[in-house]
Image (cartoon, rainbow, N blue to C red; front, side):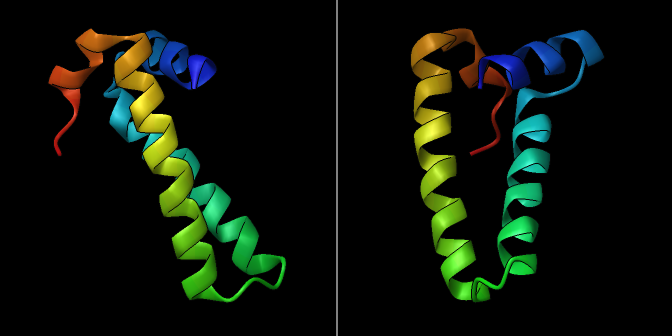
Length: 68
């Protein structure tokens, strides 16, 4: 998460955009590796929840850039 936060700052884009893009990559890798889509979607959702919780705990100012 820290590296993705830094990447968003360096690129001057929303941290949500960078995190969601990376999570999409994780989802696609899971499916490509043989995981069923519903399972991959559930697992990716759980990762996202943990990462976003950490993000707003570690960098509270990031909350204003999130759209959910």
